[in-house]
Length: 65
Image (cartoon, helix red, strand yellow):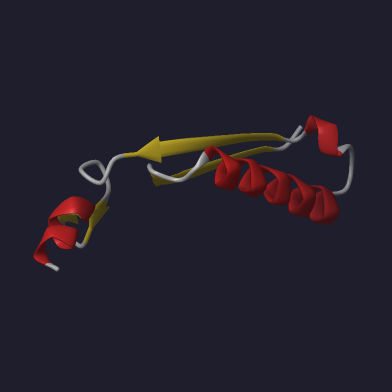
């Protein structure tokens, strides 16, 4: 059973996450074959203070403009 985990910044709507899960599932089923009902997907959301880019938090980068 495939397991897909995606980490992303928090803040997207439930509708967007539903669409992402649906399309990830369809793509995995197409590429890997097998039963799409057995694919598991976990979206892990982190805050901008927990996301680092180049040694700085995402929020700090955004605050600079």
